[in-house]
Each structure stands twice: as C-alpha cells, then as structure tokens.
Amino acid sequence: MTVYASKPEINVREKLKELDYGHVPYEKMPAGSVIQVQSYTLRGSISFTNFSTSLNSGLQVDIAPKFANSKIYVSMELGSFASLTIGTWCAGRLYRNGSPIEGALANTGTNTGYGNLDGYSYMWASVAGRYRPNESSAGVTQVNHSVKPVSFSYLDSPNTTESTNYALYVYVRPNTSTTGSLNRTPDNATASDHAVQGLSTITVMEIAQ
Image 1 (cartoon, rainbow, N blue to C red):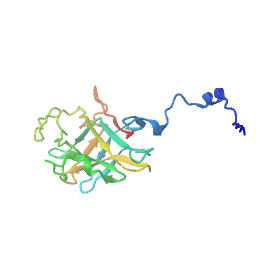
Image 2: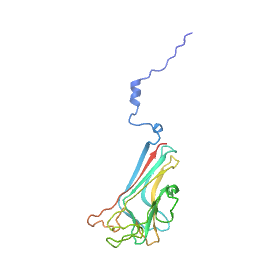
Image 3: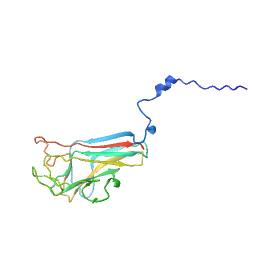
Image 4: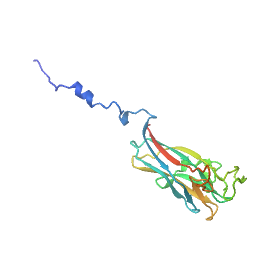
C-alpha cells in the first residue's frame, strides 16, 4: 500500500521577511553580552547634613533584568564629592532597593561607620573659608574652587527579574554641624571666574551569564 503525506507549503520569502536581523534573541545572547543599559545623570549640586542615618542622594537608576541569573554591572562617576566643614568628612554607600549591598564594601581595613565610598576609602577634610588651604589631615591638599571627582564600580547579582533600584546613599561625620556635598566646588563659587560644577552619573548594565 502506498501512503501519501502532505504538508502545507512554506513561503520561504515571507518567512525571511519575518526575521529580525538587527536583534539577537535575548536567550541566545552569549555569556558576557550586554543585554540592556540604563543610566541617569544628576545635574545640579546637592548638600546634606545627615549624621545618624544614610540619605538617598538622588543619584539612582532602575533596571528590570531580563533573566534572574544575570549580573548587573554598576558604575558611578561622581563629578565632585566632598565635605564642606573643616576637619570633617563625608561618605557614601551603594544601595539596592533601599538596603546597602554588603559585598560592595571592603571587608578588610574598613571602618564601616566612617568615610568609605564602598571599597574606596574617602575621607577628605573641607576647604571652606580659604582660597588655598593646606588641609592635609586626610592626606590631601584641597583647593577651594576645585571639584573632586570619584569613580566606583561593582558587579552585583540581584537574582531577580523584578525592577531593581540602585542608588548612592550619603552621610557625614562626625556630627550634625557637618555638611557634605555632591556636584559642587567647596565654596560653591558659581559666579567666580572659571567656576565649574560637576555632573554625576550612575549606569547599570545587565550582563548575560
């Protein structure tokens, strides 16, 4: 007995038109590929005086990972980050969804209650009130009109596909009379000759695993 089988014809030309040559499906992207990028730039300066608790600086960004096992590469570039009160300092921590990321802080030689931008030791004395003070108690000499940029990066594993918030939280030491700043010169001389203020950016990238 002869058996005949039939199947619908495939229009190859139409199928080729359906292909998206400009995009590789997310699930087929090789490990190490950047799946998506989100970024936010904070323009304008802020000052803060919080001593007992951390404060969200406003430098933050949200990302919803496509896959739960993806890594999130976090990069922060601070245009300027310094205390404004002589003999004091400010600090920052990387937070995820309102909680500090413990893995983003050095676990040796670090006093977590004081001046650390996560893994980066950051204790700068202020320069307020003088043009070129020799403020060396923190190991650096500061200039009143200069900005002090800081960079930081961390590879995180949030293990979720839900929207995730990454933010820079800041605080000051050693008391409530201390003022810290982001994106400004110590004297905030916006009208001075050659005055410059900073821009700060946080960027997050989802990395395929």
